[in-house]
Image 1: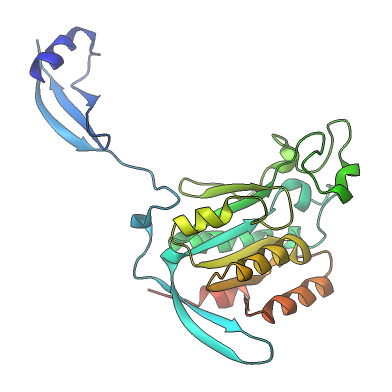
Image 2 (image 1 turned 60 degrees about the vertical axis):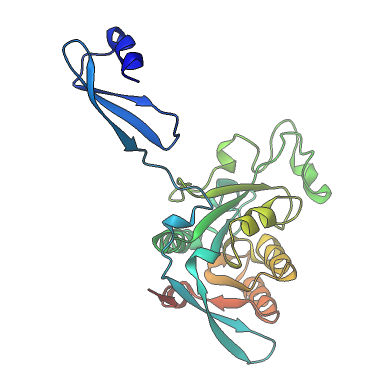
Length: 272
């Protein structure tokens, strides 16, 4: 190794030390630069970024008190681990939220602060955040038949690589998050979401975003059909065109065993 380092001497920048890669991808070699050679070499572990499935970055002693509400008033409670839980943030994109957009969901803009807070709480407790978004072909070839008329001459909602498809201000994808593109209502339909969740050991889901009767509802019903243990919808971090539509769909999801909580109530369920 000393011979190899000496051969590199003349190409080194003028600084007191230099680092090299090593055979171990998790280590670098750091050496002091002397007058004519390199000396005092030592191995330095790399600071690795967390991956979507890296459970080392989860608070292993964190749990969430969950409530499953079946039809009627029967309620049972249990605890789930934060490391086995993911938050799905659905369709919080400019074209569906901003008031000037012709395809906005009327109730969407009002829940932006709650969604921001919910994501912050999830990250604080090591819950995997999955950003579920629509990104469509400019010709609308991957859009449902009933809405293809909205896509003409390269114009339409949530087109790939456009401002309208971006997340609304205040929501940012960070290292360790996962982004999933869907082209239908359910986040599970024709995507790899179930595969990603199961490969990460995720058994429980928390859902926020828009809109309640379409993408929220169908994603939640699919999650129940796929036997995810605990599915929670945060009622004031989801929205629909009207409060009546929103509440009716929340009730339907509650009736199939989904936990429906306000953001405040959900925050109080964490136990460290």
